[in-house]
Picture 1 (cartoon, one colour):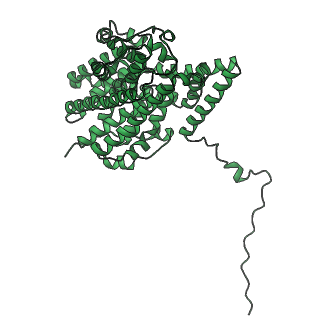
Picture 2 (tube, helix red, strand yellow):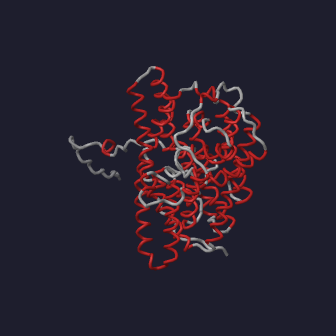
Picture 3 (cartoon, helix red, strand yellow):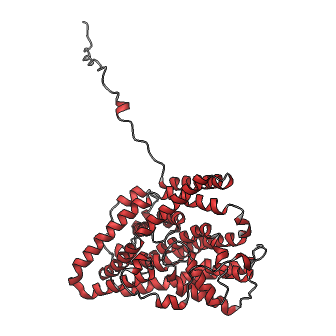
Length: 456
């Protein structure tokens, strides 16, 4: 008996006009991770800046200047309204947080404590290395700044004369004052202020969304900013400021990778590695943009990812973005004061170092989260009676130093909320332990946490 195998069905004839599936489903060109884009921008910026300086390529110099300038302008365009609504809404959000007054007080205390540690590190490094000796710089190389800070200006400048000028002139301290008044008034009004609060929350989300679009341009902005610095100053400048530059970077590194991890481990009882994995996008953006306020939306989101309740995060991070400046207002002015004193052959005593610490802790709000720390430096020098012409010596090297200063600032603005939330037992440990690295697209699209865990 014979058996026969079933005949397979005939395959349809191929269509000569059909597009192959492999061609139809070709995936779109994938961009590298955001951190790689920023790194590429920095490398290309150094290369183009070096070419523009050494070959006198005028059009390349102008292009780098325009790219960097436009990026900073776009960041600063939203500074005024962003600060106003962020501070005002953050205050109103405290109505949803248990023990709000204690949380606010603990936050300010940790701001002060970490600033004291940072300024102590800056003073110690300066006294050990003498950054002004052997530079070849003289008082004649300095020039008085166009604007300067003083305690009288600091105190009288808090209250604005009208509601328009602070936004037009970017007087951030005055904007913070008005926002605080509006936020406290809204709290006192209670339910009657609900429509105003809802409007403010919507405007704040719109501003943050617009700023996200600007942040996506950070790789291009980093190319222009670092390229402009190399083109204008070159590498020869680092020779005169070598010790001072190394001191600032070492001081910031000690705070960023030494003090903060120690506090996270010993005080908050959490993993520093987890913190840096989650917070790295904010730190790297701060390094490139040199603006704490420009980095504010990223800092706030990564702090929430680390398990800090949204209501507390929305208060602590905006407050930190305008007052918490361990790099610009603690490490840097301490080293700058010693540097200028040595250039001008002025001897500093113990009382002067105490004054530096006082100015760094109390006057840090003068920096107001904007690019640069000239106001803080002039405030420190004028308090010590040092020549303000010393600021002119520091302006040349400032862009290179401001990157690491701002990165340190932003890291501290995220560390303190984690510490306070942990101490107050409102930190979501599961969220913290699961926090990992991410790209900016992922960060912008993920939902925000709306509930606050109350302490048991």
